[in-house]
Length: 403
Image 1 (tube, helix red, strand yellow):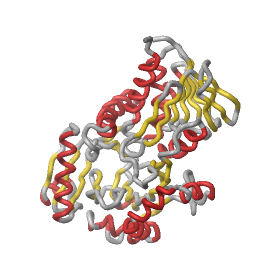
Image 2 (image 1 turned 90 degrees about the vertical axis):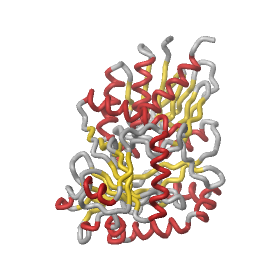
Image 3 (image 1 turned 180 degrees about the vertical axis):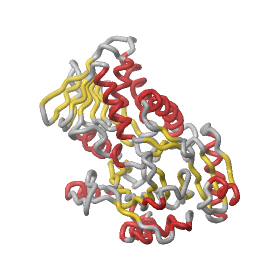
Image 4 (image 1 turned 60 degrees about the horizontal axis):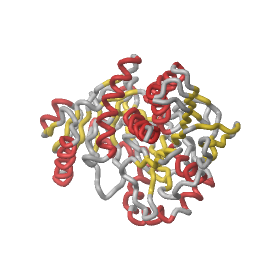
């Protein structure tokens, strides 16, 4: 394969994985990862639950289903190679009533179709055998669901880029990309111009803005949703052996409150999902007038809001009341009654939405001769990151193959 020059915009887990994959496929090439922050994993990657999703929920045959399963294998191998924590604690998706049990049966069928290993259905006694403090009418067991430290993984991926001769350039904000020059793409950054034969944009919450400034399609646009996590007091760190999740409600676009272990052994409750007033504001009110104006100017957002008023009311209660938030978790683990918890730094999900107000469910990647834009990569984006990188570099390789 001929050498060349490549640039990756964004040093989250997907961007660094793409950079690493490029160094593997194009040895001797110039490869630069450009990141506006002073560190890698500064946004979505460093503010998530740390769960490695097994692939239960996704439409069989879609990118999410295919890349999630491949991503799990690659991530597990990478963590073993780098001696990073990869803990297969397992997960139960718990149904509380007959309607949820019927939906759970459909999820089980999807999981089997997606090749998720070891999945099975449990009754109340099976739930108690695995999680003595959990209750439910039925549960789907996913023994291969794991937890990791995605920030540490991203740092290791970035380290591989540098070790292979590439560069991770921090404090370098990308503003737009001109791809019309026959000599290559020109990347306009806060520190000057960078040229590359091909550019891969993995900019998360800024992905739509960079795409529009670079001549790409206006849609889909990013609408940010924040997720608040709570850390349970130390007395409750061993209340579960693994993870306990609710059955998704198809009337609502997000999952609902669940209980998640971290690699440090602490137990968290969350997240909720509510409209964020900024794309990158993790503390306090988190208001950014420009970001909020972008959301309110998006006609799709108003269509979405009109269809999801009930969900907004439910989620608002979890935002305003810690006690209500914990009561939601008590439906699955009653012994949480009386537990205390502290707020953690929130995460912000960069969710792509089309002009009709529909949330893009699958990964969305636009690819042309000079530039690849990752337009939507929410959960399981981190799980799938190394497989997404393979997929993108396959596209780039095909473009560069002699005709």
